[in-house]
Length: 92
Image (cartoon, rainbow, N blue to C red):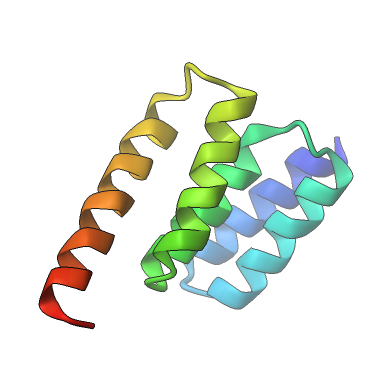
């Protein structure tokens, strides 16, 4: 389906470190199918890599809301929280 195709294309762009283009595809996948948890998780990964911890945590939480058994999203959420706290302790 369209959401899966957009998500997969976004993942290829993510792997090529084309983060802006990947974010666009993940957003399009979400718009196409808002109850599909995977593009939220994938968008969260990009945002995390960009240091946008709050936005990443929002996406990881949404993925978990849609699928409470999504272990990678739970682990990524925990890591984003830890990294945000570490960044704050360093003062930037």
